[in-house]
Image (tube, rainbow, N blue to C red; front, side, top):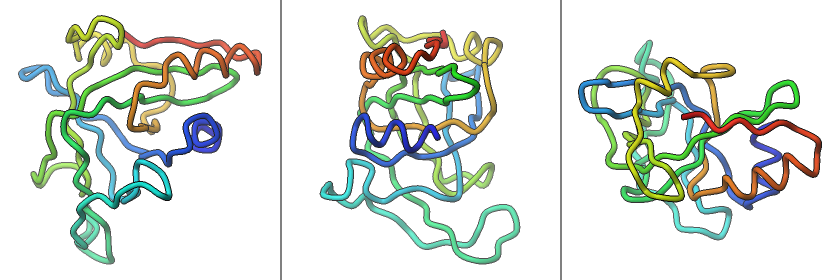
Length: 158
């Protein structure tokens, strides 16, 4: 449901992922073995990718998509009429052996001030399931409007 609602809000596909928290670098890595190659939408540019095996079992096929560095992401999930979200900035891509093939390394930020936020705080205050959906861009204001229209509660993580 999160993918569909946000697609109609911003016209872009989402990247479903699991988080990896790194307190030592204050980063969160969004990782999964499935990722869209056109994160800006059907008419947007195709992101670079490599065809690889699935990470956990080294079988089958998975795309390792290189996410655009310097871009903001809004990560959200809709669950039981509550939308939770946070904003981060992509600072790199990881090719390490841990986690899945596509790994966007990010810094959490306050979307209004641009100030870096604590990944530890997000880790301890995480709400909802591990799988959440990231979209390129800052869509917090759009999520607020959508939540009001649909009668959902919006929770900003961190």
